[in-house]
Length: 220
Image 1 (cartoon, rainbow, N blue to C red):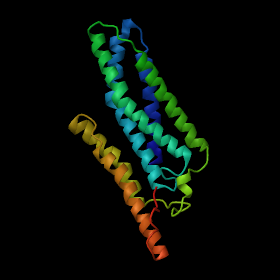
Image 2 (image 1 turned 135 degrees about the vertical axis):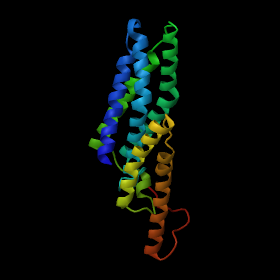
Image 3 (image 1 turned 90 degrees about the horizontal axis):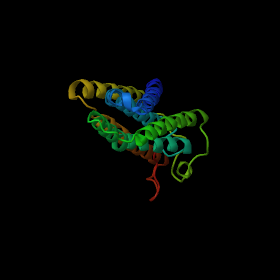
Image 4 (image 1 turned 60 degrees about the horizontal axis):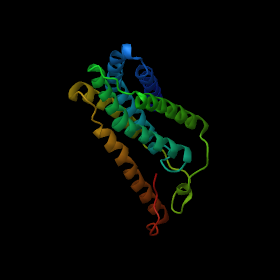
């Protein structure tokens, strides 16, 4: 899963760099450049971004790092979600509109696409630094009452299942539906942390022989 996360993250960054270069083309080659950029966005970047985001989330959920226990992990979480939404609701619609405008011979400003793709590259590079440096301290939620100092790693079968989810969804989305539909990705990324939290809470109750105090919980 770490390998898949690294490979897809590097691919996401390289495709964002490609979009930056293509969106910055001059008027003479703008239509062909934008057409290529749109193809890369639909055929490669969307799958790489979804897989990189999903594997990153699952590595947090399946390891002692958790989601909200370390500021650097939480920072990566926020940046990843922000990038996905920016790509879906800002960059992709603007790219499609720019292709249509160029096909009609209209000159549409490329500032949003150029700046947006460059910000995406910078964000991924910053996330890579966070992964290496692991700066800052633990969050207040990591040391609150009722929460273990270190979370246990998830089961091996879940690592294998989560690694296969993006591959399955790529095959279905790309070759069956013709477009990405990350339903299983979403269900796994949301459902597993909830299940894990309940398992940890149940284990804490078994260890103490009594239910947890009201207002306390064990979570990722």
